[in-house]
Structures are given as structure tokens and as C-alpha cells.
Length: 254
Image (cartoon, rainbow, N blue to C red):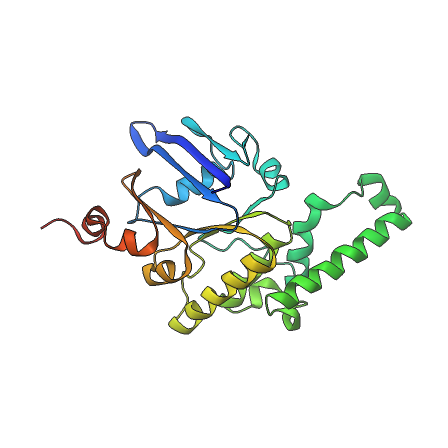
């Protein structure tokens, strides 16, 4: 396996509470990797450590052999790691198109003065950003809603828009935090196909947190299971599903 993301002995404590304890795993190029576990297992905390939203207490995170640990979130995004959130965090007062355009800021070259002076190069770049925004909205099925406020979109469309905004960063690694939350059965089925299609089209490595275990089992190449901040299982879906430690974590011991 050619590792893209490597989590090496990562721990995170909050005072006397150990949220994560020496968690280690690697995710390969092009892999769709699931992260599951009961509530409070440390899944979102791990995502926050990978994306720089909070510092690690011990250990490190690497992207293709280079440390992400200690970098700010925007520097990690510039290196090609994008994410969505469990609670949708769109710019609700902007249109769907504007949400996608904003995300391209990390890839633009025009500076403050060229923006103020409205130079020819700045105007050309703005047209390019808008054109790419429409292209991404088309890919995620929202081209017809591009001029609508994000707050006016249906819940499932807001989820798609958040993924579209992440894709606008041109990432190589995409972290999805409970993308199926709040969706009905039909929407969850469509989401599985959508993630596969986006991963293939954009050549993404995907890390996925999800409570809907059937979706994870169907979608992911491998799955890691956290329980009380510790990694208790990792492997292909069938192997993880049959692991006694995983069954006990979800169902409780007799």
C-alpha cells in the first residue's frame, strides 16, 4: 500500500480525559476508508487533529511522508486536505455558486492590490473561478440551484453543496464527517454512489466518519473502529463486522 495519510501514535487529552490514546493507521492512495465507533469514541476529535483544528497531545499526522502536525488549518487545506463537518457549515447568506467560489481562494494568485484596482489578470481569474464553480455544481447535481441562497436549499442539497465546496479546494484527500446524517434511506443510497463517483472522478483518497453502519460496510474498502479513544479493529468490512471486540462495543458484553 502506498500510504497517503498516516496517523502515528496520536493521542489527545482534555485535562484528565483521554479522548484518543495512541491511535495509528495508514490510508492508501485512492482508498475509501471508514471510521466508525459509538458516540464519544473520538472520531470527530481525530478528524480535528488531522485537519489542524486542534493540536495533538502526542504523536503525529503525515501526508505523503510530510508532517501536518503543527500546521494551521488553512496550510493543511493548501496541501490538499479538505473536509466537511457533522453540522453543516455553509455560508448561508451566500449563493450556492458563491460558496464554491470562496473555497477556491487557496488556489488563486490575484493579490489585494490587483483586486482593488480590478486589473485585467484579476478579472480573468475571477471569470475562471466562476466557470469552475459552475462546473463543480454541475458535477454534484446543483447547477440549477447555483444562484439560490445556501440557506434555501433542501438538507440533502446542502450536504452536496458542502462536498462541492470541499472539492473546489482541489484536494487529494477528502474527510467526510457523517455525510449521511439527517438523510432518508433513498438519500443515503444515492450518497453511496455519489461518493464513489466523486472519488473516482477527482482521484480522491476519502476518510469517512459515519454512524450508519450499513452504508460504511457497503462503501468502504477498509474500516477502523474506535471505542473510548482506542483503536480496537481495522480491516476489510467483512472482517470488521465479525470482530468480537466490535460486536461488544456496539452491542455490549453479555
